Image (cartoon, rainbow, N blue to C red):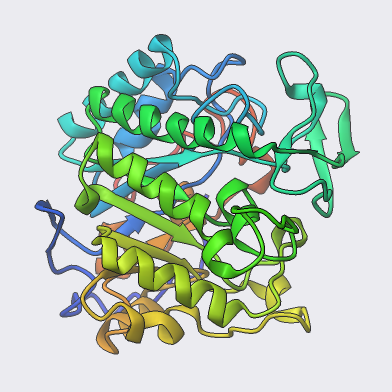
Length: 380
C-alpha cells in the first residue's frame, strides 16, 4: 500500500520554513500551509445526503492546514454527479453538520465548496430527466458517467435572463446553510467548466444580453454569486477557485489573461479570503490552446495582498519552491491527501507516500476511501 517514491528524500526530515508554518485566513488560525483540495468521491447517499463514512474520511485528514470539501450542489438544478452531496435541504445540512463536528473534534478546519454543474450533467441523473442549463446552448466536450455507462454530454437549455437571479440566490442560501452546519468558510467552485466558469469564458458564453458579450458582463454572474455568498457569511471567509488554463469539458476563452485578470481584480477589490488557482495539468499543457503556463505566477501581481492557494501536481519540493518564491501562500494537494490521511506528517518527515488506487476513487463504501493507512499503522 506504500509507494517507494516519496515527495522528497526520506533523509530530508527537516521541515522547511514555509510549508509547515502557520498563517491566518480571515481570522481563522491555520497551523500549516497544506490544504486538502476538493475531490469528488461519490460517497453521499443517492439523494445527496452526507454520511457518517464521509465524516470519518474528512476527520482522518484533519491535520491539513485547511480542508476544502468536495463540490456540493446548491440546488437540485445544480446536480451533476452521481452520489454528490448537496446543501439545499435540511437533511443535507444535518449530514454536513456531523462531518464538520467530526473534523473540529479532530482539531481541523473545513470549508465547504459550493457548486452548480451548469451544462456538465446529463438528464439520466436528474430528478425529472430535465436538461442541464447553461448560459448558452452549447454542449460541453466529452462524455458523462451515467448509471447506464458513459454518454455524450447533451446540448443544454439556455437560461432565460429572468432565471439567473434565482440561481445567484441559491448560492447565498447555500452559504447560509453552510454556516448553520458549522463550516469555517465557503469556497465557490468557479473552475473546471462548471456554471460560473461557463458564464465567464467566451467559448461557452455566447449571450448578447447583460450576462454575456464583454468580459464585464460575462464576469457578472460569478461576482454576484460571490456577493451573495458574502452576504450570508463574510467576504474574508469566502474563497474562489479558478482554472484559467483548464480545458476540462472543452473550456476555452479568446483571451484568458484578460478575462481572468479582470475577474481576479474585481475579486481582490471585494476582499475575498483567498484565490485557489489551478495550474494546467499534463493534458492541458499538451493542448496548443493553453495560454497561461504558470497561473499563480501570472496573477500574483494582481493580488499581492490576497492569500493565494496553488494547486496542480505539487510534491513537497515544488510546494516549498512556490512558497519560497512568494508566488503562493498555501499549496493544495489532491490525490496525495486522498491516499494519505496523515499527509502533512509524511511530507514533514520525508515518509514514503501510500500508492493511490484509482479504481476506488469513485464508488461506495470504505474501500479506497477510509482504509488508507497512516504511517504508524497497517491497512486492515
